[in-house]
Image (tube, rainbow, N blue to C red; front, side):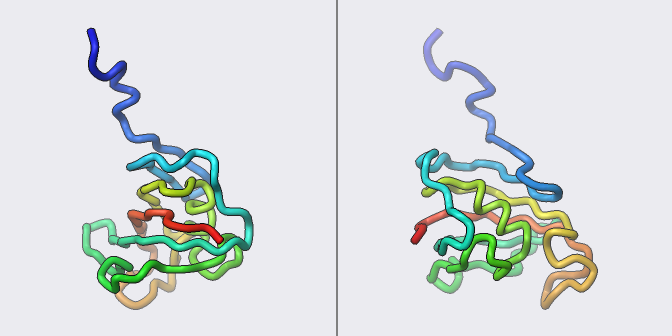
Length: 125
């Protein structure tokens, strides 16, 4: 008997936080500190296309990315997904095209792409 108490506790926590926005917790945060609307956050992230191609990463620039949650400075998926993360959490955000770049695409992101971002919430201020 001993060891892990259940397989459910070992499984990642996955939740849909808004239409088209899924958050899969990879590492728990503090569970109590969440960004308020218009609060600035720093995150590290890696964005990938559905074929696994990395299209952007703050890690490659060695500098966290800063934005104000809910202010429309980023795609809707990020506004909703990061707001559902607690300080220190690492999560995988899955973004449907309608809450990402939709039919226009942008740069290396083709139109109507589902995107995945591995995000770590580093700081709120």
